Image (cartoon, rainbow over the protein chains, first blue to last red):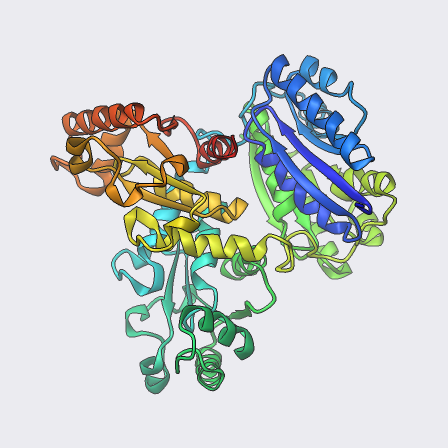
Length: 268
Length: 268
């Protein structure tokens, strides 16, 4: 029997991204076991009625009324949906209407406004993704002058997903370069990065975690051995410290957390 | 002189991702010219005071009180921040406290809960990113049976950023394959995709838009010419239609919108 199981719906007339992004807030309630269900494109009365059936079913199945985080611009559809017993968090009523009063401007109510291609930063984000993919793992040297940040660190310390997140979320152009034994011997950053020291940010990681990540890729290799991981990390950390490169440890940090730290550093 | 310029702050004790994700809501007010400023990691009284100065400055500079979207767990810090005149949208007070009453559970108030590495889906998301990168543009054939969706379409129609978004946001493993002249001549999907028809989703695009995207990459080439774009798209659309493959047009859709459409299709 389900104990304290709650079903959380994210119902939107558009992509559901804005409503869904509030799903992170559910992590503040670790004792509640949530099932999350997204229902995007709920933009006419038939789709509202379908959603209502799912809400009613959720209540029947879990024995508890569902949580509904909703972003629906049309007030008739909104009010119709709310006929079903649930706990509603209504982004339009809680946020957009009060904000509209503050701004003295009526909010657009048509669906899909928040995540359309016409958003001011959309082109930059797509360009930054292409940049990150083209400059992953030291792949290309050309165009480095366009990079806003250059991530360095040993293989598998988290450079690639962090670069992509910086691009996708913020439109920041991030290149990344692996630090390898030649760099440690020479005692400097890869020579191709000469002149870009102020853009370089280092990622590091705990040896045990790196050992585990590398073992997934190449089990039982020297590359993945704990001794080698420990040595590479020690050398990389010393090199970055000597060169005054700011670093963050990716061991217990998400790409979201790493990106927020990196953005703060490159701004200052 | 600035007309109607408003400064919107996203102030958080953690990454600022949750608060920042509500930035999409500002798109509902197209007549207001917003400047968006993120202040993450505002988790002690000194940082609150720094933030207060920036709010006060923003009001002085713009002549209008700033908009503040805030996610701060500590009620003392929250109340201290709000001493400055601004329009506050307070995620804890608006959302988490009422939700906690509904759930009969007190929300965690320590910073960084929403986007920590311990979130249930984090490992899946990172794995899916590696999968998307390893299966981009038909790069690898192995492991295709793990793909949850296989995107197909002509070169530069949006397959790569959509695959990455599906992975980063939802932890969905998406491979992607280009459709090329050999496929059109044969009149079937790439043979390597045999047996995966039910996972295939097609992207298409308007010839004018494709011409523009390809011209950025290879100016004045046959590849980028409008005539060639028109022909490839016509053949690709006919092929996908003949094989009953669901499609979406990427011309005027963001990766967020495409992903929401794709998720709906692969579920049904």
